[in-house]
Amino acid sequence: MIKWPYLPQDLGLEIVKSEGAYLYTKEGFKILDAAGGAIVNNIGYGREEVAEVIKASAIKNTYVLPPFLTPEREQLLDELREHWLPPHLTRIHLSSGGSEANESAVKMAIQYQASRGKSEKKIILTRSLSYHGTTLNMSGISGHAARKRGMESYLPSAKTIETPYPLRCPLGSFHPGAKDYYLDNLRKVIHNYGAENIAALLMEPVNGSSGGAIYPPEGYWVEAQKILIENDILLIADEVMTGFGRTGFKFSCEDYEIKPDIMIAGKGMASGYAAISGTYSTDKIANSIMDAGYLVMFHTFAALPLSCAAASSVLQILRREKLCEKVAPLGERLKQKLTDALDQHPLVAEIRGKGLLIGIEIVKDKEKLISFDEQEKITDQIVSKGLEEGVLLYPGGTGEYRDVVCLGPPYIIGDEEIDLMADTLGKVLNHIQVKYN
Image (tube, rainbow, N blue to C red; front, side, top):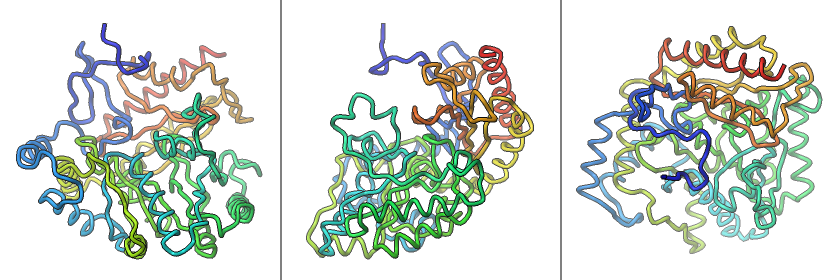
C-alpha cells in the first residue's frame, strides 16, 4: 500500500487530471477546485502554452546558477517591472516558494539595519494571527499555533502586535473604535520593545487562510505605516497569497495605498505550473546591503529557468485575457450569493473578503461568537463533506482561531461555479447543524 504524504490524511485523494477549474479523481469523479489548490491557481489548469514554454526552457536551460542571467530570467524581470510591481520596488530576488521568500525578506531587513550601523535593530515584529511559512524561523514568528506543535521548545519566540480583527475586537464586534484600539496596540508594542531594537514589521495586508480573509478597519494600514516610519521600522508585506490579482488588485497593498519597503509575492505568480516566488525591495535597501559587503544568498533551485518561463507565460495570460480585471466583479457575485444563502445561517459568524479570497467563519454560537471545540475538527468535517458534494474547499484557522473555510478559485470561474460553491456550502453547513443540534 502506498502511504502518502508522510503523515497520511483522511482527506487524501488520487487526482489523475486537472483542467480548467476542475480536478478529476482516479475513479472519474469531477471536483470543482474552489480552493485553487492552496489558493495558488489563477489562470486555470491545463494551459498548453504554459506547458510548452516549460518544455522549451527545460531543454534549452535545464539548470543555470541563480546569479547568472538567462533569457527566461530576463523576460520575467522585464514582465514584473514593466507590468506588475509597484514602481518603488525595483529589486527582485527569486526563490522557490513563499517560506523561502519570507526568510529572504527577514534577512534583508536585518542586513539593511546592520549596514546602517544599527545591528541592534534585529527584532522582527509579526502579528498574533498570521502565517508566513513552514521553515523553523517562519514557523516560530508566525501567529499560527497549530503549526508550531511539538516544536515549541526549539522555535524562536514571536514578538507580536494584535491582528486587527473587526469581528472579534475586544471592544466589541465592528466597534467604531477598533482602528484606534489596534493602532494603540502597535504603539505600545513598539514602546515595550524599543524602536531602537526593531528592524521591521512582517505582515499580511489581508490575512490569508490563517484567519480567513480578515480585513483591518478602514484607514488602519495608512496610519500604521506612518507609525512605523516615525520609528524607523521597515514594513514587509507578505502577499504570497494575495499577490497577482487575488483580491482584485495587482497587490492588496494598492487597496490600502501603502508602500512596503519589502514585499513578498509568489503563489499566483506561476499559478502552480512551477515553483517560484519573489522578494521585492527598494534600491535603497539593496544598495545599503551591497555597500556593506553583505551577501544575499540564493537557494539552489531558485529562479530555475523553466520556473521563470512558466511565470512569464502565466503573467502574460493574466494581462492578455484581462483576468485580474474580472476578479472584483466575480468576487462581488460570489460574496453576494454566499450572503443570500448563508448570512442568516446559525453557524455563520461572518462572510468576508474581497475578490476571489473569501472567508466564512463558522461558530457554535453566533450571538456569543463561541467556537466549536477544537477536537470536533469542524473545518475538516466541512472540507470532507464538501468533497463528497464535488467541491474542494480550503481549510483555514490556526487552531486557536477556528473554524474558517476559505474560497480561492481560479479567475476563470463563472456563474455555474459560483452557484455550486454557494449551494455546496449551504448543504454542508446544514449537515453540521443537524449533527450538533
